[in-house]
Amino acid sequence: MRTKPLPLPLDLPAQNKPHHYLPPLILPATRTDIPTLIDIYLAAEGPDLLYSLQLRSKSEKEIKDELIEQLEENFGHESLIIMKALDRESGEVAGLAIWQLRGYGVKSESENGGGSEDVMMLGGGGWMFSSTETGAKMKEKRKVTPIEKYLDTAFKSFLSSWLAPTKCIYLALLMTHPSYQRRGIGTAMLGVGHEKADREGVPCFLIASPVGRPLYETQGWKGVEGTLELDLREWVEGDGGKRRVDDRGWGVYRFYYMMRLPRNAP
Image (cartoon, rainbow, N blue to C red):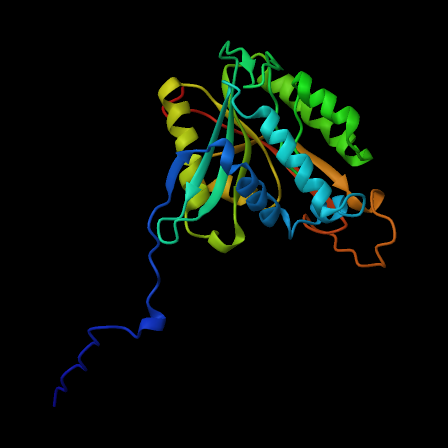
């Protein structure tokens, strides 16, 4: 005797339904957004042990004040595309991205009249760097740690060898607030830069942290020139033996130099 199949439920219980988030709204950031953007940056960096290393030599307030000042000094440079991502459900700013046009022949002048031919902003461990004249002056007056100096030199070496002779777009910073992660916000902000690069037929470059690398790989980025490895045990004092030997611990921390070729590139 053939039994009838049990009817399938028309609706799954609400708790089992995945929530489909609306795509974020990507807009140009404004100067009034700067404090919020830095709050997002620091919140996203919070779990990173390289940022924790920074907190051994600076207070969180010192780091925040330095970052706000740096972003204010760089804001308005023609070579920088500074974007914010709005969460459509809450209306809150949930992410930021900073792209830099390099080799475009754009004279980079800030709204305050300072600047040079080349602006550089880098994210990593809770700080940014700038090669503008104002940025150089800021480095002189603020407390620069040994690991900052080391990374500054290493990053500049990569930029000068790969980016200096090339018309390209450099992703200096991409951050999503932890409360809004895994909603496609980072991917959406990447898409804006990718579309511009594809339209103009230019490559993109970035320096990825261990946390950011998986996202970039899923979006077509490839590693170039190996990695920059930091043995954090050489920079940490008094860690109480709490060391983990992986990309996110007091062992080896890796930055990844990455490139994305434009779509339909030969």
